[in-house]
Image (cartoon, rainbow, N blue to C red; front, side, top):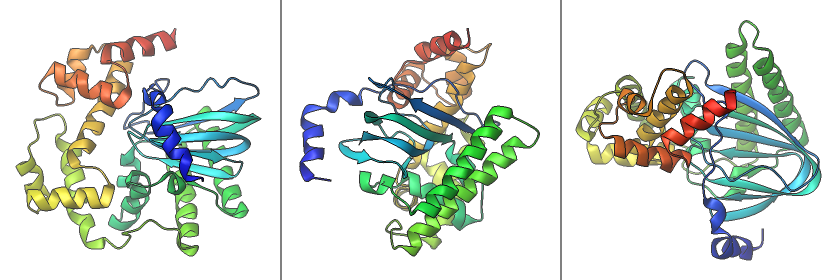
Length: 309
């Protein structure tokens, strides 16, 4: 990619970073994976800039487009795979039609809970680590892409039909898809830097377990450090090294994800959702919610209700 592209985007096109929420299927712990198919036959494209508290895998099988991630821009072609972590602003402008893509959204907890310590966390870090757009958009060899595409097509079928065992099948297919990609990257020396961090996983795993179990309560740094078995400064450094985000930011994302699910369900209002997920101040909840999802909690709730009618 020419060096001027990213600079031009920063100077003249930063307005696209106004976040737009994908609100049609808020994910929950009981339904942590959502699969969609997107076909566009003519322009202008209807997709809007977005940012969400989920991980995303986006497979492009037809068409050409310009993808923007944070302050960088890159052309995407058929056979490419885009990997996005929670909170990463992104957008696409189509250049050649028709365009076809398969997209998987999933909660980070899906990978965290895979265990053992190394596997699930290594997969998650592929999404959450700080990286360039060239690392987020990869063009695997044809056989690997074909295998990934078959898996995601099966995931889409399972997601649509929702037969018995579909959640288990979704998790299994997701794991196989990611393992295939990561193994191909390792074989071709394309793996992420700082891969050897085995000794760092255990405190981070203890932290994640503590956050999942106590996110509805007030949580302080000394509590988290005690649960992790390390000092506060060590915990801060480890969490950023392994996952690429702070434990505070991860906790906020975790809480907002659950609040969004509550707001999408009948019988919950904004105040109830805020206190149910551990926020002590409604104004703070509103600020953090908007920073992650690009809409106020009330607007999010109203949009979700409108989508159901």
